[in-house]
Image 1 (spheres, helix red, strand yellow):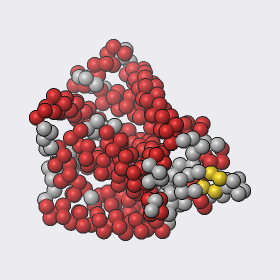
Image 2 (cartoon, helix red, strand yellow; image 1 turned 30 degrees about the horizontal axis):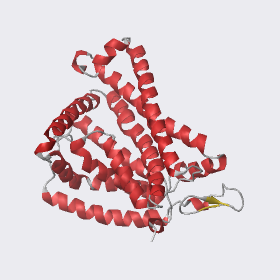
Image 3 (cartoon, one colour; image 1 turned 180 degrees about the vertical axis):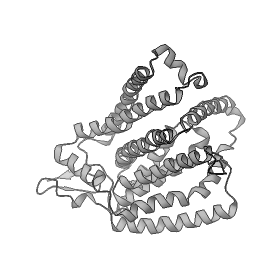
Image 4 (cartoon, helix red, strand yellow; image 1 turned 90 degrees about the horizontal axis):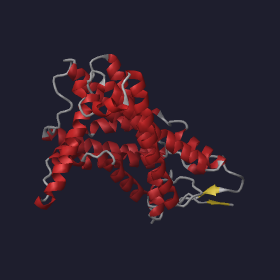
Length: 341
């Protein structure tokens, strides 16, 4: 039985291109967006803070020497992220999908966000799962690779330390304005762009490569989603998070549902960090220590029960592509996204 039968709202992208062509175009678009966005973001940051490109190369490497480093790096990264994972993929879809197909996809996937209860449920499910995820985070962080991988392990840990330093820089929030800019650059933009790219385009494209298997699309997209963050000792929890977003999209047929869950995950951490940094919260939310085991057990049970209930609700209120009268008379969309007259 095809996995699509489990998802009344098929997540397949109406696509005149073959899946390999779509995948190659997506990769090329994202890489181009990273290069162009990086240059544009760097240029804007240099212009705003009045530094040259030579100085700019030292800002992220030694941020303590530059009082403006946080804003400089945040703006550069945000522009690159916006062009690579939001603007670029939208241009790609608009350029490669015929007009009626593009309107159909946009209306069903990015149109009305759907019932508020589904969006609230997605955010609540993410919060409920946090104690259980702390155990996965702790296990992955202390995972010891085999000795013969020691050179690779040393490189991965060094890379993570560099990323940790940049993360600490970007999440340093001295004022309300710092919190606002962090929410915009670290929560809002990733929620929109990463869900559009990984769930909206990559997931159904991979599903087509695997003969229409939605499950394969979800998990392959989740693996890629985790890998591009280049945090090897946080790979498994981020992969599980990506798979959760993938199932939310498959169950609902709307990108707004995983976007809200993604925004909740990133935004909640930033808000809690802000409270902690200003003495309004006793516990450091950046501390990766696992939650007490009773909390973990309760979290697992509530996440499973909540996920089951949310799945039923989202499937009952899903947006199947078939219900949108944007195609020519006599055309329809099959489960594998082919169009027939």
